[in-house]
Amino acid sequence: MKQASKTRVLVLFGGRSGEHGISCATAASVLEAIDRDRFEPVPVGIAPDGTWVRVPDDPDLYRLSDGGAGQIASVPERVGLLPALSKLVEINGETTSITDLGQIDVVFPLLHGPYGEDGTIQGLAEFVGIPYVGCGVLASAAAMDKHVTKALLSAQGIPAGRWSLVTDRMWRMSRDEVLDKPGALGLPVFVKPCRAGSSLGITRVTEATDLAGAIEEARRFDPRVIVEAQLRGLEVECAVLGGREGAAPRVSVPGLIDVADSVEFYDFETKYIDHDAVKLTIPAPLGEALTARVRSLAQVTFDALECEGLARVDFFVDTDSGEVVVNEVNTMPGFTPYSMYPALWAHEGLDYTSLVSELIDLALTRPIGLR
Image (cartoon, rainbow, N blue to C red; front, side, top):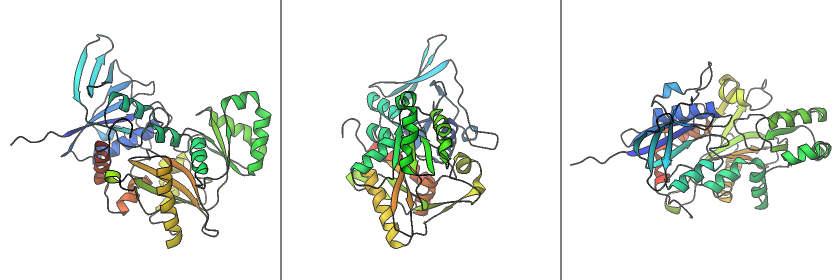
């Protein structure tokens, strides 16, 4: 009897954003864990200049270490997808020769930040006609922009905190007005790039005189900046998986981010480098009522943004007042060994390999196009 062929998975990582190295680290974990009895991974890296290149199927090349993060280098051989044919091809930029790399059954876009997590790759997959893991174009774009996320959630009655938006035009044309406006939020505030993740470009501002410098720092990553009132309470995260065949999304127990007293806030260094400075506690010690409230809000938030496949919903929970506020939504959360998303599902009994398989299976059962 002829053995069924394996599902070919285009594992896409790297990218043009400041989270290039984190994306490589995520890919290292997925390539190591993917069920190779069922799936044939086809790793393709995206260099910082946007070039797609065929890369070795070797997780060790992409891990995050003390020496730095993985980096995809641009080469003359460029990879691309052919619309309607679901084919991956490689074009030599010097000789213009074309190599057929075979059929692709599903795309696993392990991209964090702009040009990947923001609906751009999702739109390309829709256009080409290949299933892909994760949220669609709308949810990916909306969740990537912190201002849009908060506006959409607030409009539906979901608590999302208080904030102020600073656009590029506002900063260039009305700087004094911009610096006065966040005063209504009180101090301290957090200044963040609207469309960046992994805590890049974030500053906690305790003095009004430091606000302009914090906005300039955020603008190094994104011309759109958000200024948020400080939220009080525990930093709690929930992992969400799309439901099968139209069923409600599945929500993990909440996990607690417990940051050492010496750390001002949960920044890039704490997340990915200084693992001794943070502890993940699963489940979070919230009590039955607050746990149920957080899980319910995670599901409501997932549906409110029309998410699919997966998302991690981050909260601040004030255990004294019982207030629960959505901080942000990540449609492609980190998958490194130190990341909360896979750890939460492992606690629920879904190990890393099974989680990767479930995400691919969800993508393959979802239709391409309007839905």
